[in-house]
Length: 639
Image (cartoon, rainbow, N blue to C red; front, top):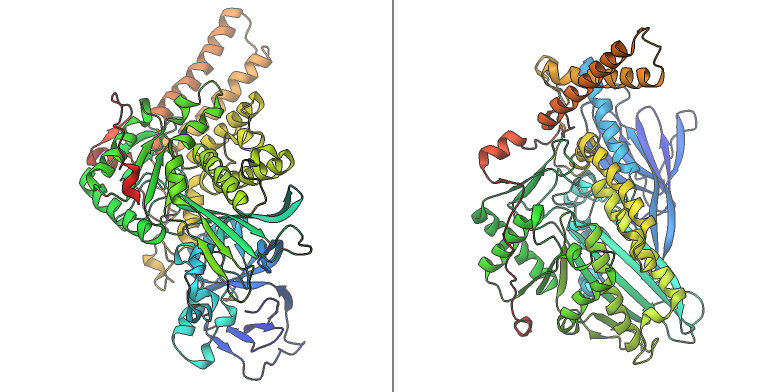
C-alpha cells in the first residue's frame, strides 16, 4: 500500500504519484479513474499546485460532481508488533468540478452546506489507520485467518463494521472488483477506522511491555446521542463500540522496540439497549422517552444477538441503568426481551450503577466484578505465545464477551468497562509472570496513573463523537476516586451536552449520514424541480419567538443594570416596566417549552420521526413504577 504520495493538480486532472508503482489519474471532467502506464508527471507548466499526502480516503458525489478526500497529515501513535499506527492529523476535500456552473443559487448554497458537513465531520477527529496492520480486527480474529486470507489486501480482510470510509472508498473498490488491470487500485485503498487508539510502553516490576487500547466504532446505525438510539430491523444498535485491550511482552530482559513474543488481548463491547426506543428532544433537560412494540423489538434483538454470538460467543449482558424512575421502562423492556429470547448463551444482569454507587461510593463497583467473577474466569482472554518463532501457539482464547450498556453507553459504561479490563489485566500479567501469583496491578501506582488516563482518554473520545462533549465521571477513571471538582466538571459537560444535543446535533447527524452513505446526493439536471433538503417550513410564530425572547431578555437586563435608561420617573412605573419585560421573557420561555420539538435542530438529510409521529405510534413514556425482574441464565449454562 502506498504510504507517501505526491498529488499534482492540473486543470484537467489530479495525478497521484507514489514512491513506487503506477500513478493514479483522476479525470476532473468525467471523474474517471485510471492507472498511468508511463507514470508521467504533468509538465510544470500545467501544474496549478502540488501536495504531499498520506493517503486517499475516497470520493463522494455531490451535486456539482465528485469530490476527492485526501489525508494531508498523519501523527504516529505508536507501533503494534512492528506496525506503525497513525492518527489522521488533517484532511482536504478537493472538488473535481472546476466550478459550480449549472447550479442554481439554492443548489450552490446546498453544495456549500454539503461540503461544510463533510469538513465538520472530518475535523471532529478520532480517525486512525495503518498501512500494514489491520486495526479493525482483534488479535483473536486475526489469529483465525488462514494463510490465504493473510495474503489478501488489507481492505479485503478488514471487519466491515469498522471500515469507516467504506462508502467513500467504493469508487476505488468498484474499480478493483471490475477485474480490469487498468483499474487495480488496490494499493490506493486505505481503510480508516473511527474510534480511539493509545499505545504506551510501560514497566511493572521493572519488566517492560506494551499496553495498547483500541476502540472501534461501528459504521452501522451511527449518529449523535438523541438522533440515534436503540436498534434497527437489521439488528444494528446505536453507538456500538468494540474495545480491545492489548499487552505485548518480549520477556524481562528485552530491550529496544517490543515485537510481541507474547501477545494478550481482551475484548469488550458496548451498544444501545437492543429494543426499539428513542428519546424525543423537546428543549427539556430530560427528553420524553418512547419504547416501541415488543414483538418488533424481539425480531430485531434476535438478529442482533445472533451476529454478536457468531462473532464473540456467549454474551454477558451488563445493564447499568436505574431500576426506577425515568429509566425503568428501558430496564423492563430489555429484561423482557432477553426473557422472551430464552437463549442459554445470554446471561443478563442488572446493576443499578447510580443506586449502588450513590454518595460517591464508587468503590462499590467491585460488587459487580465479584458478582461476575465466575463468568470472567470462564470467559478468559486471548493469549498468543510466539516465544518460539518456529512453533507459535495460541495458549488461550476468549470464549465470551461482556456487553455493557447504560442509556448513552458512555459514562457509566466506560467506568465499568475499565474496571473489568483492570481485573483481567491482573490475570494476564500474572500468567506471563510480570506480576507475582498473588500480586495485583493496583499496587503499582506509576503504572496505574498511565492506565487510568488511557481509559479516561478513551472515554472522552467515545463520548465526544456521540454526545459532543467529553465523558462524565472521568475523575474516577483517572484517579480512582470521585471528587467534587470532577462533579463540577460533569455539570459543565452536562450543560454543554444539553445545548449541543438540542441546537447543534442536527448538523452533526447529517454529517454522519452523508459520509457513511445513509444519504446519497443525486446530481440535479432539472433545476426547476429541485427541492432543497435544507429547506425549513416552520410557522412564523416559531421563527419570531427566539428574536422576541432575546430582545426581551436584553431589555430586562438593560433596565435592571441601568434603571434610568428608559426615562421613567417613578418607582411604580419602573417596576411595571420590569414586569412587562419579565412577562415577555416568561411568555417566550413557556411557549418554547410547550412547542419544544419545533425549536430544536433536527437533521435534514435522513428523516427522523418527530414527536407527533411517535405519539401516534403509542408508547410515549416518562416514568415507571415497577422494578424490572432480574433475569439471567445460570452461569453453568455458558459453558
